[in-house]
Image (cartoon, rainbow, N blue to C red; front, side):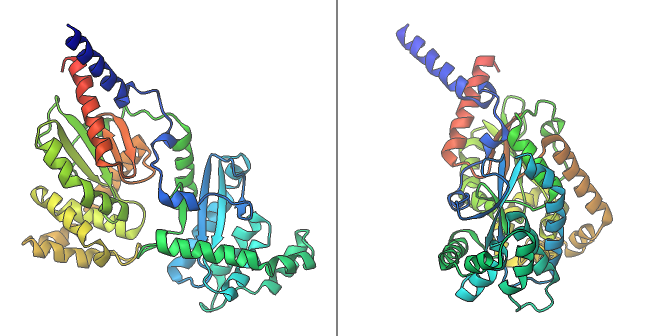
Length: 410
């Protein structure tokens, strides 16, 4: 009898650890921590527009050394977002941390043109400089911003002293070195929240703020109970199995790292045992490389989707040369390599009908789930993780769900 009692207590403890029995959590509780996050918190000397205690701190890295045409368009969008988000910043919902990327003393001194202005103006002026610059080798000249500083109540002498502060030059050079060694990749992002790359867009950031502040709940999200044409299904769907739904951007480096490290192991342990079936959903963000790679997977026959998705992640650095470049032609080579009809895949990929269907699916997911980052993983009708949970975390979660199912008599 004692052993039965001990086993019962163990079962109850496992059941209580299951997500559905946990206290209602806010979105911020699901954001995995990152090594990058430690270097993206505000320091007292940082240029911070808003409060360090705001709901969300966005870190914006500014590459003052270069800005191509795509960059200029990005700066235009950021300036519009900055204006639209002013009320959110004033209400303490958002703050923006500005960090220039500089390697030399000359670049560091040039960056002080903006760092020595009040934070709101530092962001505005740095973005305007990059957007309007005609000579891509031109650096900002601090002396040209003295009148601006004076009009904002900063004396010319105080501005000049700030510009020549070599401790700040070294501070920015150290952070640039850290950014390049630990954060930047082949297609670096310049906007981050909690060590996770995000988009500097007003609507997106408001959605992100609402997500991190609000309790999450997806019981009415019918999209989690459907199999859609673009889904990659691994295992046989059944009501007595745990349904794990994974949202992945096909062009995402975090997704690649997660897939390469955990997916096959998870399939071998849990899908093969009949405990779980996977629904992998390619999810396009607004960047061109994400949209076109999702459309490419949509056009792949169901039996080939998983295999080609894995090949896409393995060769990611070859076909995703830039977020603003269409990778379709390079991806078609993968279809040919797998003996699929190039003509059929290309026709599907170039079809407006495909674009409409993928866009409609994306809207459906976004309307019901308010996705803010990928990977995002659901277990049955509940959010499990955002980011890259370890295999041990996934194993514990599956065991907890199995214990709950046993208690429910299923």
